[in-house]
Image (cartoon, rainbow over all chains, first blue to last red; front, side, top):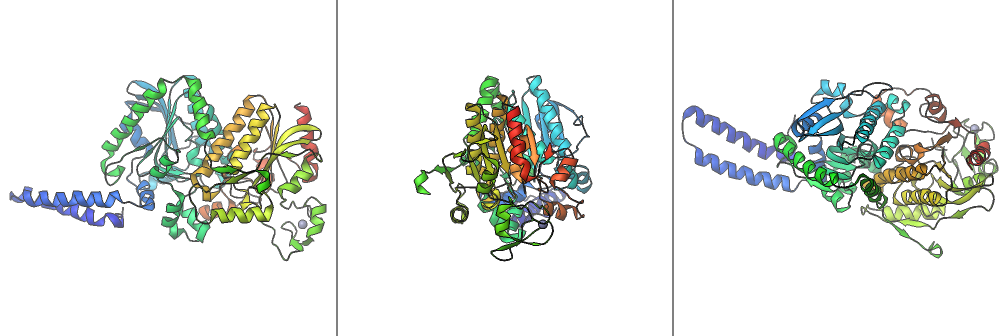
Length: 322
Length: 261
Ligand SMILES: [Zn+2]
């Protein structure tokens, strides 16, 4: 993994510090003052670099190959997990994982796309891009959760729909619509956590929820910045400009009322301290699960529908005006 | 594929390659006189073809805001309004088809590719809400290129949820929704309300799918199967109920509404 250009000065400094520490240990010489001074510099630099990330830098952070995946969150957040496979119609899609997990003793249903950690895994997981049977598996597990009154927690991290012949042949448009509709009326609490990429309809298919949370360096948009740039200027290399226009960062989406809360990441991104990120996600889930559990399911569904009903900006016009 | 304009008076048919006189097309419901190819048609023409004469009462118009402050969006909207005479890409109102009352929604491709932003979403939701309140069926004619209104970003994406939920509420009242897919029904329009019809009909040759054919071709670096994402292909793969040629659509929908009265 190549480091990001904007992180290089920091990573170099961190490397020097660790070399110096090793040297001290070997040579038994005392450099503690120098080390302390370098660490102060590193910490200032870290704050400077990560406090002013551009939207596109966040997009790239969201795609960092070491960023925690759905299975990482499942391992870090829950006490137990039984993975369940298959859509009972066509097959099992490795690009979506799901099953029953224990959250502090309470059974919940967990679903999310799963990216691979390397090329081999990514091929097996189709880069976390689900086929229709993946969405159908998610739908099946969510209906199962509804039947037994288990809360549903979805983790969202996919760049968009899978652009493939088979996905189209087996009706990915249809099944995305079915997922959206079914989640809207599901009689059980739902929390969606956008952990990395929230790309278009594929993300929304798992994103209709009572609380929508988003990690600090995640993005959520109708279109990826690259695709947007190639439509606007026929030049996908201008993705950074498109990312500004699309307002896809958690800060913007919170302001628009699209999401409910932002989960802070360690400085430098979730991958720099996975355990910390896991604890953060767990704390947010604990808080919101407690709120949702106190609400009657009829009211949950009503409020869920009302929340989406409100979204949109337009003016009423009198007929004479046009 | 769009019909290539050659000059103001003639268009080339994508079906047979012949030049067709535009005036002629208006008389034939935009069917190629030589091969029967279904040209795209505007919402007002579609309305005239589908609804009983004089039966249509449109909903009050809405005009889009620019929620993201996207550069040039207001101007694009103004231009499209001038070119089409529509407030946005959806023409929605109360109508009768074959003597049966319904709420009719028609998406017009000529307004920014028939893409779904806040206004299209809201008009569709109002259509289903009005229909639920008056216990009427909904007939929606979709035909939007990319589906998403990119200039509205996340607000466009959320219209998928909003419209799907409106269908769901109407459906839970035991009411009928007939979804008619015309060329092209793709992206967010297809992956939301248009897919949720009790009955899904399509016009011959209409492109139907989620990811566009060019995107699929580029991503897979493979030649696409013959007829990929056409209505015929969708029928063969079990995605739609029936293909209905344009001259029979009104009569077919009329029958369906009658059987659900
Ligand atoms: Zn022809």
